[in-house]
Length: 91
Figure 1: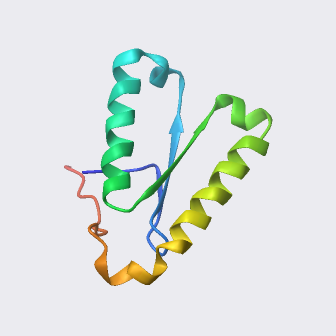
Figure 2 (figure 1 turned 60 degrees about the horizontal axis):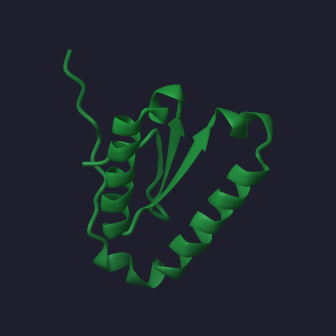
């Protein structure tokens, strides 16, 4: 299961903010495995980190490229292997 920070269900683009905790090797490995599973499901994952907040040039390019790749897959829309379901929080 993938629960990204942001998700565009129209195009299948997920946004993640990687704070400093994502710098540890074990967390980074988990992130890479999640990104691979997302790609296998046809979801583009774009990550942002703190340096992107200072200069968004690199992030904007990555985001634009993710949407370009996602748009190429639009003709396969009916063959998506993912679905959007609301997250249920325990009270």
